[in-house]
Amino acid sequence: MSGDSSNTSVASIGVSSSRRRGGVINGIPKRCWCGEEILPLMSKSDYNPYRRYFRCAYAARKKLENDNHFFKWIDEALINERVQMKVEKELFDKVDEVLAEAKGSMKKTMLSAVVGCVVLVGVMKVFLKSW
Image (cartoon, rainbow, N blue to C red; front, side, top):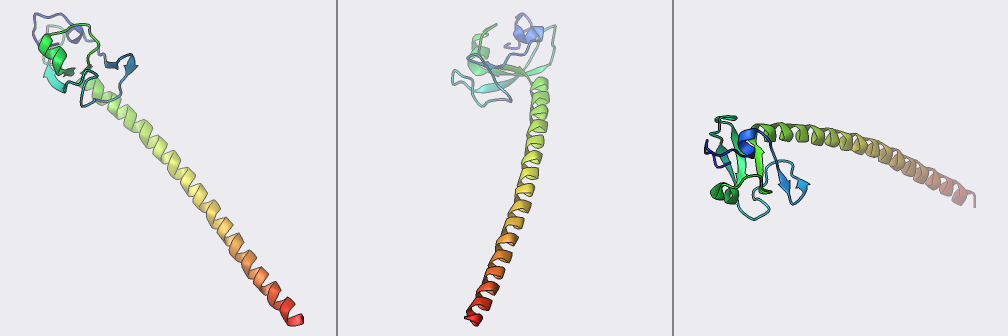
């Protein structure tokens, strides 16, 4: 994963792993779970020549293989980001619908309260005049 063509590693085989102590990470974090920065690198392997990926700086420096430090192919990360943005947009659209519905309901409630107050004032005026 250091980019050397002599290494056969997760990066050269084409498997993307982005885990943080057992959990899956969506997107690209600023730092690996170990505290090191995430670096954009380029594969120089025979299996994935010039394919770009993100890797934990510590793991890249130590040329670690099959470890739990951050690794993700850039193209896969972009696809994941796009899918996540689509899901978020659908969620925001749903929230907008609910807010619009609540706003309409609130207008009806306010209108009912205003009409009720006007009727109450009218009834009180009639009652006070006749008293």
